[in-house]
Image (cartoon, rainbow, N blue to C red; front, top):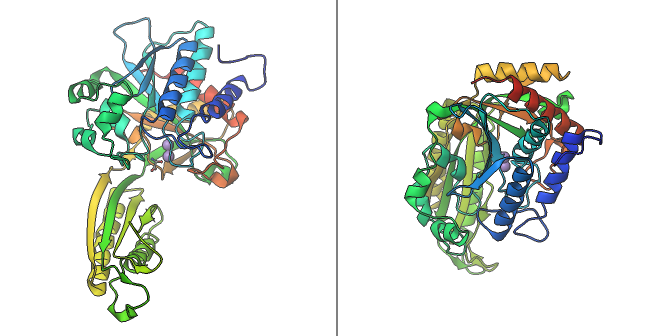
Length: 417
Ligand code: HGY
Ligand code: MN
Ligand code: MN
């Protein structure tokens, strides 16, 4: 039994305590980093499976490493409501991003089971094995398998150590073959909907003094990798006008991205990774690599910015006499949430005595992938410490976790396919 009903905020306490316990599994000793199929990832998966079993769920690990817990309906012909989120993290990440959306439903099912309550549909909790895309640059990998959109070419992609995804799967005891992965695609006709609980990862709820929010739409992003190629030369003997400095060119490009992506309210542009391979302090950089992530509340705004950025980066390259290679690594369209499910979530929040707020999500979530095959909704939970996320300072309160769990419980009791 996961929940000690004798304590105050029993559901919220059970959730936050387990988030702390799960954070003990990390690829790094001094930070929370859990990337796809590493030993820490497998240990986290095993821990989640154990908690699912303790809550009375039927558990299986699927061909891409998702941990799937099923709380079956009495009616074998019933449709399935899927809930869940991801348990992989960014490097040096927070302990609630993704994990809240796995632990909260597990705790709520434990509560339902203790009351002997069954639902008029099957409830599946999916702990998605990979969403952040850190190890293989393959965002939303795990949820894409559930909608039949897994890019099989990724199986041959290598990580920083030269290990292919297929080899990593087999080392983790997964089949690592196309047929087993293709078989994960859910039949949309058997799905009732998808609901994801997630921390807001921003300051809006905190600033408004509100604990919960209803997501209206999820921003879609375009990601690119940029490689600038100049000429490596001696730092002491190469006159400035004669240089083909790849890093200086990249720096001008990064500022151009920042300038263009500051021109619309929901538009954002981020260069999260920058590097000079084989660089040295006394060598003018001959090569510089960086990532580009551009997103907005609507595809048209985002795509206009992408086009302008590509045009301006190429103009900078020409003027500086360097080569620029841009490769798109991801394009995910904005995903609207279901009006019917947003209304239901709002009613549940109001019944819990909180004032519901509708807000867009600037962060991407597995819900945007499930939205391709079924109606989706998202319940946002207030993020403390200024709303910071993708940072070990990421935090939330037991009280907000309790309230979110009670709203989720009301939702699953009230929802009908
Ligand atoms: O990038 C995102 O928005 C998410 O954290 N994967
Ligand atoms: Mn994240
Ligand atoms: Mn997340």
